[in-house]
Amino acid sequence: MGLIKKIEAVAGIALGGLALVAIGVTAKSFMHRNGVHHAGTIAGRSATVPAFDVPAWDYPASSKAAMSVVHPREIPVLAYHQLDNGCAATALMCGRSGAGAEVLSEHQFYDQMSYLHSQGYSSITDSQYVRWATHQPVALPAKPILLTVDDGIDKFYAPGTAVLRHFGYNMVAMVVTGFAAGSQAGVRPYAGWDASWAQLRALDPAIWGIAFHAGAKGHLISNRACPYFYPCQLAGESAAAYQARVSADVINGRALLKQEIPSADTRIWTVPWNDLAQTPNQPQSGADPKIWLRKFAHRQFPVIFVDAFVSGASGEHYRYEVHGDQTLAYFIHELTRNARGGAFNG
Image (cartoon, rainbow, N blue to C red):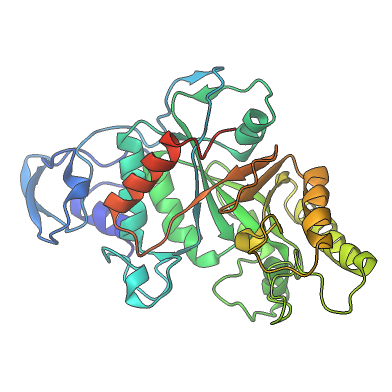
């Protein structure tokens, strides 16, 4: 049983229209981490609140902050990958369990969304972000935030949807077309990472947006000496062959994404491995990829997300990548530090 379903069972209500009712826990309860069950009162009767904490405030799941046309200086962007892959949904932390640093538990994701909601953040769509990033008029909530998840990982969507719906949030799935097409065809070397086209189309459009992450081969490790597909010009590969290989993967992948999911936003590129050949210490061969790849990317996409090594060039935007080995306190600290430091500036 997932985390949200467990909360529903305790509270005795459904998630469909309203969020959980207040149950006598303080608004700071999401910081509590001793794993002890807390006594509360639900609808006039005593109840035991599970160790994962439930917010004390009442609000409709569909509630949003008032929209305005104010152009904020920055919009925080969060990047996620996996949920509950090798750890219990109720685990306080998941990354340290050996499942991998990028894996969060449902518990962690819920607590982070709860914190964002308590601070007045409202999630925005990919289209709103692109309009903001390209300095077009756009209505935005008072405290906007963009939530993203990479790779098209099917295991994220079911538990993630329940949490997002509970808080009235939406999220953008950054899709690898090679994963989706392989899953659709029954070729699944990345089983568990590869939602099919049919599964992606079945996602609730009120909660999920779709954008481009990689094409047929762009998220694969292509060569040990030069592991990343996009920035690596292989030994013996001419500049023309390198550029044709990379541009075909991006252009064809983006076209396939639009064909399979017409609502997909193909103005955004979340660069795999954060590697746009933008710094000398990134794996790459020669100077040509460093010069060519960034110019190609900026011609193709008005918004390019890189989780590290942002060059400061127009169109490149930073995302804070959330890992499962981070406590809630660390998450809050890093989000605050990055926001105050101007990392999310447009």
